[in-house]
Image 1: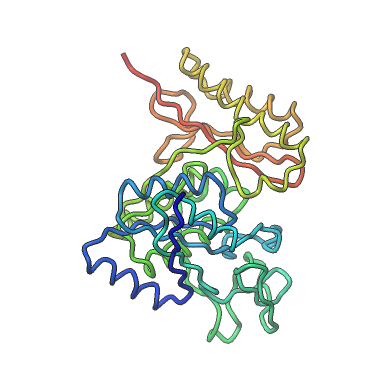
Image 2: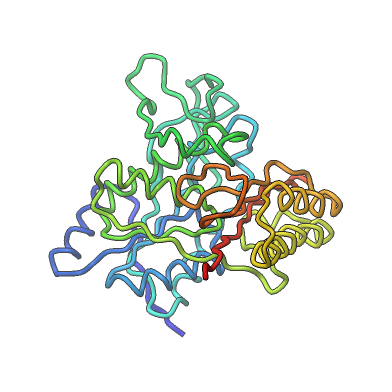
Amino acid sequence: MATKQPVIIEDKDQMRKWSRSMRSKGNTICLVPTMGYLHEGHISLIREAHKHAQVIVVSIYVNPGQFSPSEDLSTYPSDFHGDIQKLMAVPGGVDAVFHPYNLYSHASISGKVKDGDDGGVESKGVKDKGVGVVSCVEDGRLGHQTWVRVERLEKALCGKSRPVFFRGVATVVTKLFNIVEPDIAVFGKKDYQQWRIIQRMVRDLDFSIKVLGSEIVRDNDGLAMSSRNVHLSPEEREKALSINSSLSRARFAAEKGQVNCKELRDSVIKTIEEAGGRIDYAEIVDQESLGAVEEIRSPVVFCVAAWFGKVRLIDNMEINLSRA
């Protein structure tokens, strides 16, 4: 078992200096961005990173900018010390962990400034503006005012019910890219829309970074791994298996000739609802544009978001029909 101790860096300037020193030695750098509470899905991203680069950087930062006022940032699970132990056990190890104290000032839904680090640090003096947990201080000297948006891709799927989510993602990933300066970045395909948004952002803004997508990792029962799974009760977890099973049946049906998207969607929705889930969305979209399709004539991805209890789960399945 590997026991490589990664360098832990909290300061932005130190992180940038470290990356540049690694590159000056001829190394290729790969960044794996995470919000911590690592599981096997995250570890699979690191394994993928080792295929493409000599130096691996994992960022651990709970990004407050992607939480809306109705979402409780404080309940997001964290275990930084446990994360480091897991990273040390990865074959090949990790070279550095970027664990910033805060990437920008922001207002919590309670009207206090809260850091995104483990547990959070609160201070007074900032009022929430109702635009998500991030808003700028009134005098303009402090706080975060600049956003990065991928306007079309962010509107579909998760963007419908989480309107501030992807601007928070795109903005903080831009900052991570500017600080770490990687050659490659690896994102999980479970967050399919996020992966495509980051790819498009990199293309549109001319980042010299290759963005790779890594396949979904599932537990033995088929549930897609997620840090939020810890909040599911045993009964809710059992019911949540309906997501993967219904998606698998939809893909099988499509491969057998069922290409009508409405019929496939209706079947998946029925299965999940009968299991006790509450559908946020169930959409079959083009893999790159994320535009909805009526019939499967090109590569698509079937994306689902559903609530089980108080936990919102997302999952997806690519459908690539072979053509004779």
